[in-house]
Length: 325
Image (cartoon, rainbow, N blue to C red; front, side, top):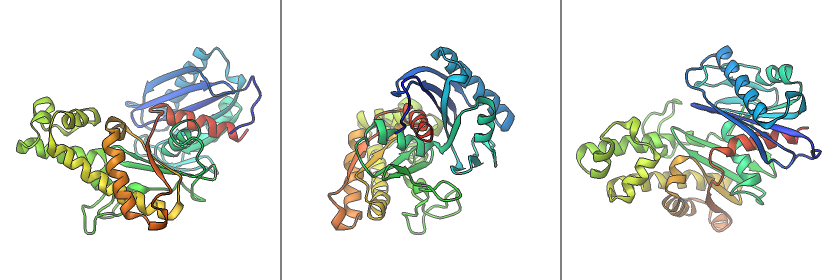
């Protein structure tokens, strides 16, 4: 963690796929100002940057400090980034490719700026202030539209020399399975993401096997989100529960393989799905992971649900940014 003076201020920014969040923190990482805006509607370099800086200025205004008082900025971006040179290599959601975001922000705010992948930032935030605090090695798995992954080893974010790593969503878990958007077949995302679960749940509703779900939202996959799936399970849609348990089995299989490789103390499950059904996800994912891991490591890790919610990425980015000052 950063050795900062008592009057230093740090800004964390999460440039999410649908919403962006800027938070100003004091030296103890207590939030003193925040601003949230929609990312949707902004696409391409200039449009997103304009909205990004507007959001930062609003957070600074709420905090009562000026940009000149900022010691550091940490920014989490969805997509592939090079943490070393501060370039966003590609972000489909934002329409970005090879954007030198660190230099752009440094030129504007004249302080230290650090770039992270948004999932890496979330896992780092949880490792510092959330369900992974106190652990030396942490693995994070975040099922959503896709499945994001990140890892902290000996306090450092695991990354490649040229780009981010830990693409656990693209670990093949189903031989000859469905083709994934990445080009491989049977990736974890194709069977355990919220999108995959929602698709199967919509089919169950169409067949009449998920009556509560069908009554509430019908078969429109865009409406079958985490809270709706949790409500369907709670109200007796056993077919939906079976679909989620199967997804947990695949999650556990991939997690078991990762535990065998990096031996984390804590595995954090984040995202709306896991947070909406914590008991179901921890129980069935843990069960499958312990079957898949090398026996000597079977009792060396614990699977927990993320604690920080939407603040994980923005806080993680701020702490990581401050650590470089």
